[in-house]
Length: 98
Length: 435
Image 1 (cartoon, rainbow over the protein chains, first blue to last red):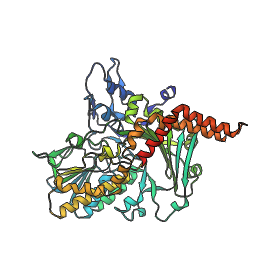
Image 2: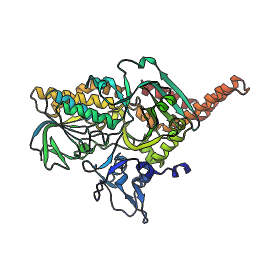
Image 3: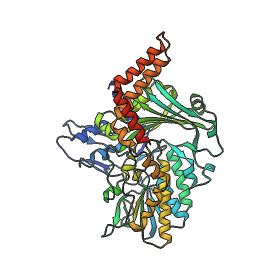
Image 4: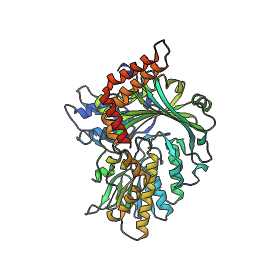
């Protein structure tokens, strides 16, 4: 849909406060050559657009803007495509309103 | 490492966790509550509506100092197509009562207050502490927790899992399954700030009166979903949620959906000129009665969203969370006061008490509703809203067409879209699931 391309998630995430736990990503994608349908679904389903395709066509995750909803855990953890934990105490998104 | 031993450890400081911790501490139990956020509330997301009755049972005089936004005097249900909405509104001055029944709240702020009551009752609350694992003995009995901060294990007679819809501990310990994509919805929400007077004028409100709008229709793009708009004092909570399985299947984006909802001609004027200050996302349990997992076991109970206790039809969750937390706390106190061990057999009391409450009774009433809504999403969320909208416009537009022909044409459009069997089938299935 053309209207969706105009929505910049980065701008939305800019409203939020985060304490990034540098070097300790709480979500890890299992190394793969060809991404599973579950992983590919995350390119669209992640509300913070943390999942992106790299030049090799693999799905990568960058958790800095993660809002810790768990959608990717629900879709991808069972198949082993990702490892999912909560950030260490105090780290991650800090909601002011929630 | 904490060497102290606790009567109970509560994992999580949302509605259910706070209710459980408060209830047990008030009865004299020694309670430790662990929360991963920097303060209680900083990880919690909800629309949000607070139900006074359930909070009164925990904090009777909460109206004196709780950060409440607006008491609700009006509810608007909208059935939307791309350019219109057909509404069912209920507004009553009866809701302007001394002790109002429902309020809008802002969760991070409310939960901070709720946590202060929990602390006052004597609970030890440790924030910025993520529980990584349940500690179990050789027989599988839960004997405490491990965290990312304190090292070693912290022991208690019973662990109350109030870890939320996306709780990982119960799943890791094999106590319950991870939620399935067709049993949870993903909702995204923005906080739109506007001057108080602007909100009151746009929503037809006086003083602290509040209104809720809930909307279904083409806004969810054929998925099982709902949009919502809650008026707070100086901001509007606006969001939309759909089943995770539907997002997965259709490839629609949550933020694209949110944006389309905001630009709908019925919505845009309400938020025009607002300043957005936060974007959040959260899962909502949608599986209903049939998705409720095992609620208790050797040394543990599970409460609130973690136990999938959410009434999707009435959009009630926080009250079920609070009530399940309170009941779990009371059940644990009863077991404790008899000096009985926290075995599954004894903790079954929690489920027995919960079964007798509105929590399980309400969920049982609608046990067939999720399946109907989730498998018929195209009809209930796309086809019918479009048909209703067309029929309403046909009914209202005065263009010289005789009324008899107008009615026939509206009826024909319903039959063409769903056929007689489809229409009667849908009505029958809906009535049966609602009963």
